[in-house]
Length: 236
Image 1: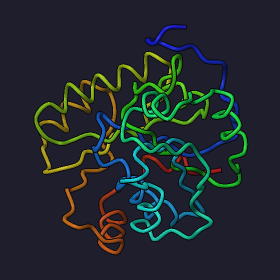
Image 2 (image 1 turned 180 degrees about the vertical axis):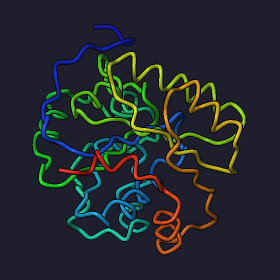
Image 3 (image 1 turned 135 degrees about the horizontal axis):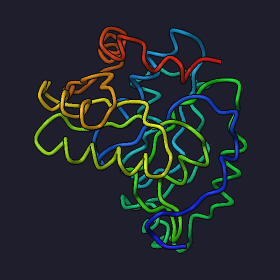
């Protein structure tokens, strides 16, 4: 199996509900968007957050950030996962730690995920980040069986990056739930992404300066997915 398209068997746990948060790049705002989704969708019932793979754990702990910014209870955060010290691509961070991220380990983690609530699952880096010698992040998405929500910048270059991500996901038969744009609002870029990507932008999140949970919650309830387009992924 090569490093391009890795072919998967069907999802291990096809009872899971929710979305997989991916991005057009690293440092794009996936973690803040994940916390915002918690604020937005717990209004309709219980929801959980999971970060299956975290690199750079010494510098960043995305689960802890979502717990804080999402005003999350312990029951809303699933803390089990692969945690690696170096802030690198998962395959390289694991290699430098002296091991490989095994598909069987990931499958066991997925199989143990409770199915009684919908999940916001946050990826590491972008859609085509390598996990090991044969898996990309898209393979983890397929194993989970969840549609992808793409987090993208709003400024120059985002049309190309976002359309490439959409194309990569659809080429692997992954459903695109929508896009959240982060940064200064840019109507032209939003329209282009929706038109050429045949998708919807469900939110335009500003770059928050030292964001706090209350501020993020207010924004989420007022501005994130106002048309309720993502609700189907969180329903029973």
